[in-house]
Image: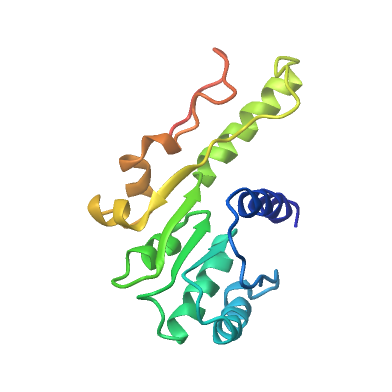
Length: 178
């Protein structure tokens, strides 16, 4: 899957640049990503007892990672870091004792609106670029708890950086905010 492949390339660069040790690599895109990956993480943790953190580049992989950590009762010693955010992710991240401490994400609704604006600008011959960045933000479990965030509506209100109304705009295109 292209987005996960691109995330993996960046991950490899970060590991190399920081001289980190990667103890294991699991991740399988299936019809039951979280469930299938929970078993892979469970098995990997049994073989790699010194792990202190796990990066999972997709929220469904992170859900599986959390399950694998919890099934080994290691949530106090292993932290999970992910990418993407949803109502279900917020619930897991804010659960007492959750190992999922941070995720990088964007607002899927804001991305959809920005993509439509890009398409409109391209059709009108006004886009002028071949690619457009949709900046992500770091969202920590502590931020969610400190701000009583329970869902994406709350998150949008507490983290205005998720709003992409200024990405790819024009006077004739309404700037929709969520």
